[in-house]
Structures are given as structure tokens and as C-alpha cells.
Image (cartoon, rainbow, N blue to C red):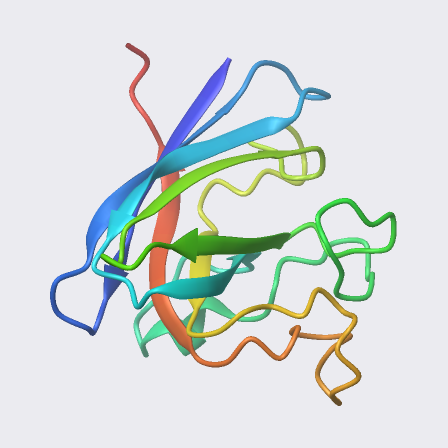
Amino acid sequence: MAKASCVMTSDEEGLTGSLMLSQAQEEAPTIISGEIAGMRPGRHGIRVHVFGDFSEGLVSAGGIFNPFSKNHGAPDDEDRMVGDLGNIDADDAGVCKVHLEDRMVRLIGPHSIIGRSIIITAGEDDLGRGGHELFFTTGNAGARVWGGVVGIAASK
């Protein structure tokens, strides 16, 4: 069993929250769960990015993690980047309860996301279906607003 955590940060005041990740074995799905508060209400794209580097802000995290050179898509699509996790919803109070199970994200093996980052965008991800010039690369989800580095978590 592999476990990781991701404490979310932002330049915006009032954001608090963290995500816990777990994977039972290399071929098992990874479970991502947690709660984030202080978000703008509505839908927001969530994705894994290549680097766990915020030295120049969230842009330093690089692009969406894509080790197999796929197009941007939805979590259930066959043709999707590993980092494409879809959208999460923040309620009217700005609280988002996250529970995702993903078949491509790994904590174990050569394509582990430990040391990479999870980024949440200002807007909704069109999941590669939007018709905008960015739909096959970023989902046209707007600016990177919140992020955290995925680190190894203590076993409890």
C-alpha cells in the first residue's frame, strides 16, 4: 500500500485543505480524497502536473502529466493524459469534498506521481470536447489557482 498527501496552497487568502492519495498495488486504481475550503463556488478542473515546483508560481509545475503523449480528455476516456482528473465542485460556501478513483494515476511504479503536483483551475475543464483551440491540450479551464506537491505520507 502506497500513501501520499498533497497540501493545497494558493496566492488567494483563505484556502485550506489537503488531499490524501492511496494505491493498494501497482495495477489498482489510486484513490484521491479530501476537502478543500475557500474556493470560488462552481466547477473547477483538477489535474496532475509534471513538476512539484512552484518556485515561479504554479506555472513552474509544467504541463499536465502526459507520459504516453495522449490528447487531453475525460478521466474515463481511453485517449487521455494521465494527469486528466476531470472536474470537482465547490459548493456555495466554497467547500469541495473530493473523492476520485483513477485507473491511470499511480503512486507505485515507473509513472508514479509522487513529487509531481496537483493543480486546480479557476474554471471548468471541457474534458477535450470544447471546440476551443486549447481543448486537446488543456481543456480551456482557465488559470491555475490552487496547487500542492504530492509527497510520501506516513503510514498509520
